[in-house]
Length: 300
Image 1 (cartoon, rainbow, N blue to C red):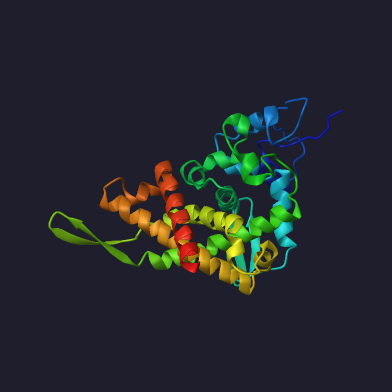
Image 2: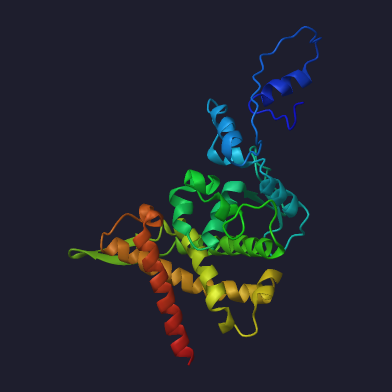
């Protein structure tokens, strides 16, 4: 008896058969059946067969994850969750073609969610330099369990706390992105020889995942500095959330701009490559903590 029959490569053929208007009696189709002991799509033999049989198509690594239980759950969860904050209704695009943007809707692509969640949990550099690893299991050198799981383990659904944190991360990401786009129009001066040059912060938005990780650090370690504000207040996306974003994003912007300027002044690298540099990330974190310490001392 055949159980859990899956079409690995043949969706177009099946679709064409379903739409055919002529009599298909006598039509022959070549079919290859592969029997495996465990039919989970996430990893193991089944996942390897799927990849091997789809390499002739222009599929990306994330495309192999679109039908994972957690991805389907995320799509349904957002569909059944009322809009909160200023983003409007979040519509999750777990597969291509993605939903079309429209008024009152925020389209969240699967690859973007992976980057946001992974950066929010503390490691923004990999999300920028090696995004495909967000969709590979740890046994294949990836971090899929961390990007879409809980506590480093792959799950079929998230807890309420994980979903709320994800919701918070998405809103913080968009808030900070808007601020960085404005900051990119600003300039700073550097001296090259006897000449002064005016340099724009033109690549600052590329550091938004770094900034997002800093906002998480602030939420975890310094939220008590915002009087009578707790995590539940942030999840409500009202006045206290706006205050948190306003305060933390100012510190984030100063930290990012300081590091950006120093790298350009000292010719330590190109602005375009900043997000891929682990040393730069360490420096940004140090600047951020120094700013918070200075702020605390002034308030005392």
